[in-house]
Amino acid sequence: MTKIAVFPGSFDPITVGHQSVIQRALPLFDRIVIAVGLNATKSTMFDVEQRMQWIRECFPNEAKIEVQSFSGLTVEFCKSVGAKYILRGLRTSADFEFERSIGQVNKLLEDNIETVFLLTSTLHTPISSSIARDIIRHKGNLIPFVPEVVAHEIMSQYERLK
Image (cartoon, rainbow, N blue to C red; front, side, top):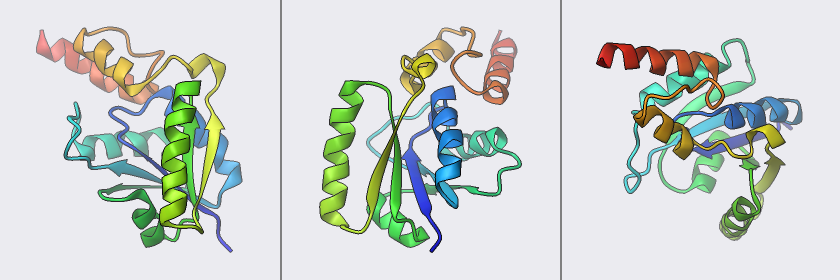
């Protein structure tokens, strides 16, 4: 049986923390579907196609990774791609409490889908997409926060905006 995991998120933008969790999860699964959520109630800085492209650029030669967009319930998306696992990264205890409750609801909705938590590396604990967006708004150095390919592309836009 193929072990397929869905890693859902907004990835607005993808961070080095996301990238690390994905890389560390690769040995655990046969396929990881990175699911870029379309959430009408959430305002995003980058459009979904740009976010998906950046994720693909972060894993250019990784056959086990697939990138798709989705809306609706994560468990329904999991069923549509044949996934039995939801992958989530945990940075803090607050993340754990939030993710635990979502994981429990997902389990009530679909008993045969398990949520798997990976702790972020200590180095990436303070990094979030929200922090990256704030640095972008203030035209700061993104290199420590987002994958290099993403940082260089966004920071080159700073120059064009001057």
